[in-house]
Length: 386
Image (cartoon, rainbow, N blue to C red; front, side):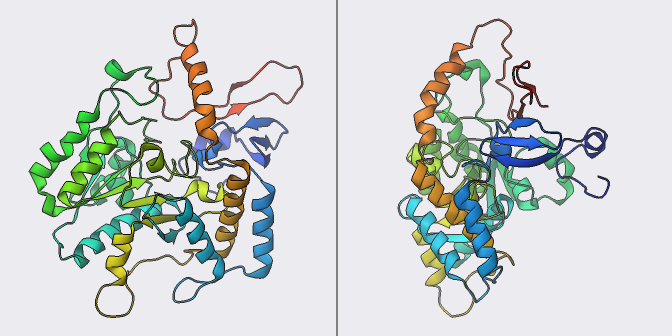
């Protein structure tokens, strides 16, 4: 075990007591010692269709034998264009163009660069500031950490973070909103901080974009108050500031529609995605942009490369094959809307626990680990895996 430096892991502890999985199927892992483990978090909010789904497996296998790799730099393969079309078909109306990356972190970096380049094309090159939010998680690239608001990652790299970034307050208020059903009733006024404090301080003419997760993820699963996202959209539109929804976690059915923006009825200017696009099987991410932003690049005077940005593996054939398999699975099994059907029964069950003795208060938990199931029929039930 010595040679692999594991990410986001207490490596010394892990290697003293390693936890290794050998296979997976549906909702379950099987460990190297034969135990079944319920993957209660879809690993890292990414295995949206379950593990080793047949259409995804077969699509990857078939593609590996036909075309293992082709660059997207002034070259192309049909599958990347087909996947982009499929994503555009389920995206909010007026957002029909997709730029592929390899991860959510890269998608965030790409969206921020697009915002800067867009404003420059529009003759507003002073718009260079970004506004994030406390407790937000936007990946681990320096740009994502800069606009993010998770204290541990910001402290670790504070000396190298981007200048010109400010943050909105987070939306959690346990005194007013604990045990709310659905969106908390109070808290929309927190969005007013964007106009009353941040724009007043920096000037709208210097702000490129606001980036938020529609529902916060790794920094704490925080549902936005009623009217909060709508107010952010209004303020950004009024001042010519782009609104970026980071949907790396919330995309591809996690809230009951393809994207959270559709659940809340708000169209951002850019959407970042990853994770669920391939059900976690092969790394793939991207940015969906509205038609106005895309047109600004395509209609710019002169010729040549419109956007000086990209990755070697943008639109990788195997990743695109996995995406097609995942999108087919979602469509055939109705998985993009399944959460909407399950939400009310699950909500009722969770709220029924309130006030019962010996129930752990999980209001402050952002992540809940997998559940380790006993491999022996009839043995005592589940216990916390971590």
